[in-house]
Image (cartoon, rainbow, N blue to C red; front, top):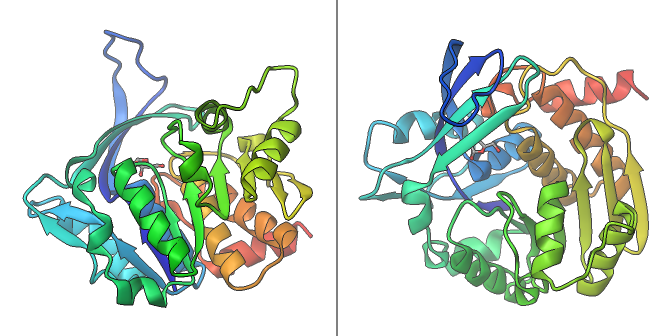
Length: 304
Ligand code: RIB
């Protein structure tokens, strides 16, 4: 089972020709209210791909909780560990421009009250892999990572939104997934000098080597770069007409975790996750835009 420990939000996404500048009001063309949150999005993506998924998360006792969780329940994610707390359900305000690029502000609410102890030992014992992001309390993430390591689980962290992670935290990981901003923050936190003369490959190799983990760097339309088990892998992106990139990184990470868990080797798993992320960009929204396994396999087959 894949245990995802992470955030649940309700996303309110506005479409506009361009993103507003500071102090500016722009007129939008419409809005979409749909389930989001990096943890929930990754759990949902992995479940659509076929993985058995348990989500450990926290929501409020308010009107946003049910719509934020409905799609996860419909997809068959196990939600028995989700806490209902006296805090507002997380909410994200998103603006998406005509090119599909976005800006996001998250009010985390109940997500920050999610604790490692909300996951009991029996649930952890059933987990093959534990997947976390950085929209919940970092100290609780570290506590759960330490328990997951002790329980013999594979550990994956998506350092999003970007944080400087202490070396002790990086030492608890089997796999780190980052974009370019998140890679820079991670290197800084680890105290690794990453001057600009170094290539991205060198930076990824350095981080992977120092902490004996796999590192996957997502580069948007430029594809994916990874260093795993001492080898470098480069995967091209799948060309699509991007409508909305919200949650594409979450789709990538969730499907990568699921693909690795079912035994796909690194090149195959990276390609599968890249295909899923590309498809997620072709529709508006986060979870509502995620592809099924059948759709992912069709894109992989058509581009083989
Ligand atoms: O990664 C996309 C997600 O970031 C959105 O769904 C939003 O809720 C924020 O958490």
